[in-house]
Image 1 (cartoon, rainbow over the protein chains, first blue to last red):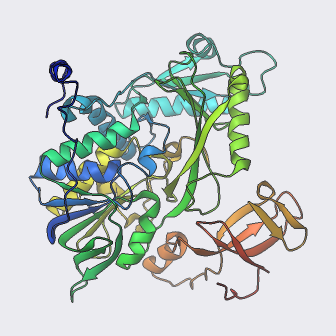
Image 2 (cartoon, rainbow over the protein chains, first blue to last red; image 1 turned 180 degrees about the horizontal axis):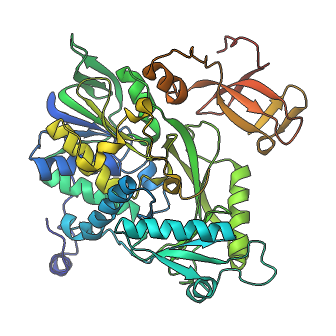
Image 3 (cartoon, each protein chain N blue to C red; image 1 turned 180 degrees about the vertical axis):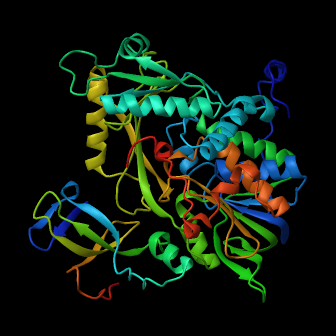
Length: 416
Length: 89
């Protein structure tokens, strides 16, 4: 059923009772061509692009819990492509461009709001680094503008600019096309579109093992809902990538950490852009509901707990209040964490694994939400064709052996 | 989370810094690229018991080992840097 204003009006005549579920909940079939493990944004996007770009429709998405219940529902909803290196710029800007057309393509309102993202400079070194950063973005064809102190003050009057400021703001830079998108809608939009193309989405279906043939290639996955035979497997499980890799019989250069975020009570519109202060760790935007969304930093010890330590909550709040003193009277509504897959160069891994037939999309660390469209696009490409997509070629697992890392400190947004 | 520094006793988490996985043996210099890459970057990253190093950075400054569950954060053992990994659980 196509969503439109007309359909809404027509529905009004019948008390809006005519809507059907956005996707089916089928029973698992005995076999699929491709099984995608992980029903978050990346897994659902992979399934959608498998069907749409490659005509591979005999596909199941296996999700241990519910759709978008992991990091897709636990991030700070920010999309951007302010990266330094050419490989990263191509990858992330392709993702942002897909986001720009996605609501229309999926016929699902992702509420993409390109309100811009301002990085704050607190020292002369920050200013120099940002000038270099902006130049690199221009060279890579990505939009960016340096801002003076006065321009920052004019754009975001709430930022502490007084002579007593603990962290003086000397300037900053803006990526105008960055912004926010509704995270649940990204998962649901891809799920609905994938379902419409015939893909089976299986929730409450946990993978418990892999069955291999004599040559070591994957033949089936064991799940909590029975054995499912398949020719190829795509893993898109973020912080649980290592767990699935261990089941399949290989290791990854990944460590899982809890990434915290939190929201305040909702207030009237006060902040119409995203503000990141890399020096202090403050990362703030206002949701459409009015909550101040505060992120995000890692508890710096390995963790699979989807909650963050109070010690870090305090430091995030302290940093936020140093930049936005006016928020000191807001009450905190919720605090949570997602388990993120951090690699040493803060760049993703998209491609084959040591197990024939098993492919992976992981290593996005603290920045997976913005990478959903391109993660799905490139994992679908390698699953369908057996060859890595041009954009994903630099982002292979093999780089950790060859040493050709893409050390993208900007990927993390916040230094850690 | 609170950790038991073997020298200072129970202290808050933010006095400590985690130094990552313990008991990783450095390969010989003639190791292959594969062995060296695995040594530098590849980790078990278990959802469960993790043998790891911690430093009481904002206290006595001493390093020590901890066996901690990565899902519950329960600490099952604390032992000296040079001791072999204990059997727990």
